[in-house]
Image 1 (cartoon, rainbow, N blue to C red):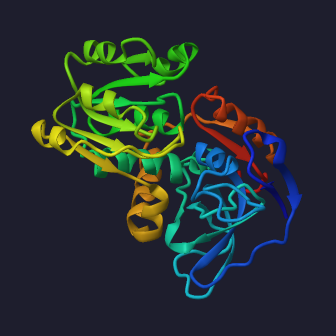
Image 2 (image 1 turned 90 degrees about the horizontal axis):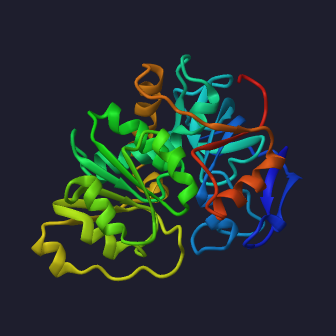
Length: 330
């Protein structure tokens, strides 16, 4: 089978290539999937540059979410059969023609849902849903600030907030030229980072914000604390900027009744796969019911993925990208 392979850590795509690899077989509790579409995510970039904890060994096949057709089921798997359309979280190896996945993290795709959209559901949409509902305890009418709002999770949040009862959406972006596209995706206000960002956010929110969703590690924590209203919630769900996390200030958190939560879909998938799978099924059902639309940019082949990884690394990506891997069932 053909797969995208990262041969060694690199800041660019010079060590990423498409190779022929042995086709995987499912172990107990697993399925293999003929991948029609695979999600492309910033976590691939973090693996490519060698951030600790992302690529477990080299060479490395990236890819954390797929959609396609069940090829084979392993021992003990129930409820999934060859030929079935599915979406799945993958531990690694999703950017390949055949990907293994745990059956517990694989969900049938309703007939009303296209496979390109389904490929965006596991890591992007399910993450956004759990960030809002579980980690941030979002309530209808609240104001939500999302850093890096132009990315996949940011665009998913813009689609999910209306489906969860509505609220005010404020996004920050790293480049001023991205503000128009992010506003068009559903944000009420979009602010480029730089200048007096806290003042701009407070003006847009009419005070403080109720929820902050921050994928940048703790580099923006001082700002997050400054703009969060008493009783608000800050959720840290990534470390896109790299570097060491700074300590939290417990006295300020207690004084203002602010909660800071951490969220990792990878960790949740490992420790509580039933919660990750339930979120995946819910977003697929929302799409099928017409309550959630999922605009994606479809890339035509595995060979085109390294260029998208570099777009994301340079902060020039917009929205959600999925790669077409094979045509079957699409």
